[in-house]
Length: 259
Image 1: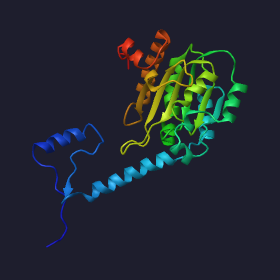
Image 2 (image 1 turned 45 degrees about the vertical axis):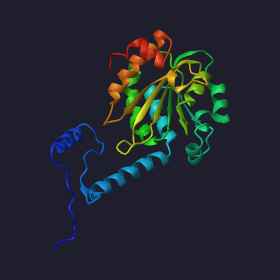
Image 3 (image 1 turned 30 degrees about the horizontal axis):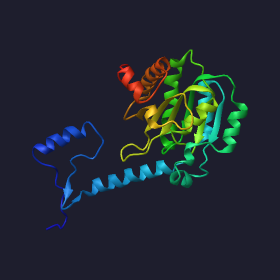
Image 4 (image 1 turned 180 degrees about the vertical axis):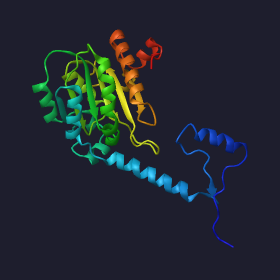
């Protein structure tokens, strides 16, 4: 007689519920078990997804290649910047340093950015998933830029080792009314490549998260680039009309019906 114990599936009415939930989400729902543990198949899948998430956090953004790609899409200059976090280890341990530019980048913007005000600054930051940025930013811009006809755009910026709030300093230096930060989100066990978009009216150092709007889970298995671009257009138009973002915009705009 074999000493191997087969995984026992979820049985009864719960099994039907688990099957319906699994059809709606990649989350681990209703896993079978072997004794007091999960099945080897499910354990190995968990370890694989955990490794992908760790790799996404540690990956380095190829900013030079991305700058060439985005420059061709926007037809203009792209500034490559860096936060005050000198390396990945420092970035992960010191979130505060990822929220501000290093001196070289600040000087670059002060010297080369145009003095006239702009409607919108588009900023790309690696965040916690360079993979998300490399996969989704270019397709998103291809969908979004045609919707921004008539907007005065500041030079596009790519930031290495950047957090969301670094867009406040960049937007202020570029004289932009609104800053949009596209950033790799913290990887989950089913989403190592999720991109987020954070929109801030009158960006300046000291802004808090309640003053921003966020569109998250931009990826093939989540919110498509087409839908994300449509939602961004609605939020940007409402922000410019009402001259605000964040919690107040959600209240005033009725959660923005379009998209």
